[in-house]
Length: 150
Image 1: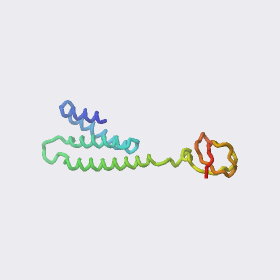
Image 2 (image 1 turned 180 degrees about the horizontal axis):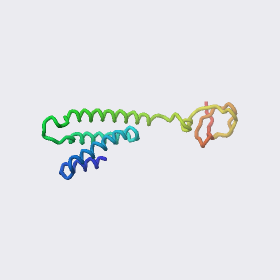
Image 3 (image 1 turned 90 degrees about the vertical axis):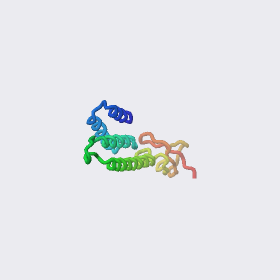
Image 4 (image 1 turned 30 degrees about the vertical axis):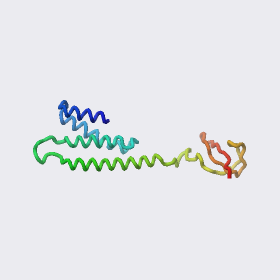
């Protein structure tokens, strides 16, 4: 992504690409990357690239010497700062959610403490009914338990 943005800016600076092509190639994918950031687990990578591409494309959007027809740099700067704050906020929430322990599915049972309802076999041998055990593994619907030492 960074190489594509750099290549477009370099070709624009050397006047090898028309301005309209560069604007379109920076603004549209920039907005696309910002939208994709909401739906993909990229943790800010697409959002930062989209923000940079959009800001650069917006700066060269209106290339005219006539006063009053350009886009003020302050507007582009404010928009880029707001977008950066949004991307960093969403990414930080995503990273915090990723670090949380699993609370659903069979993996959440690992390490759980329970009581044997029916006598059976486990890692430490046979367990009597009512014995306290800890879940150490799960294979389909079968749990492997070990005795809980008080």
